[in-house]
Length: 154
Image 1 (cartoon, rainbow, N blue to C red):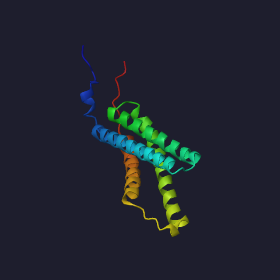
Image 2 (cartoon, helix red, strand yellow):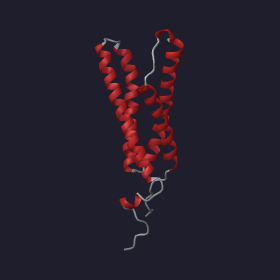
Image 3 (cartoon, helix red, strand yellow):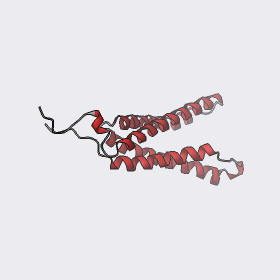
Image 4 (cartoon, rainbow, N blue to C red):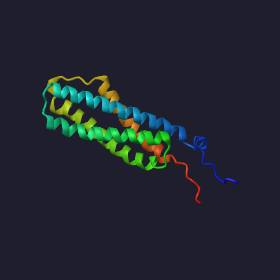
């Protein structure tokens, strides 16, 4: 029996963009995991300070859902699943929009509404927000250009 098109796992690595997609997948997994750790830490601190539970829950649920979707997209991309492209192209723009909104809201609050507090933004604030925005932008570009391996029609 002669096989017209190889569908083995090793041949998928030779496709254009396969390595870049795997790297993006790993970075999305790391970013989503880090976001989950930061949110869990924030929830623990909020309950330790007796902050309003409804306020914390409303803000945390969206972040946790986006982090879990980001990790899922990263896993699918790392495994180079056929559904990874569409799923990641839905998740990454939503996560990018949320990241831009959260970053802009924090800057507006700290510089326009609360300048008298004298709060200094740390390197972690700038690093995490800017790196997440860049990661989502690069992810969208790389994933949009990636063509997953297609199985031959029978």
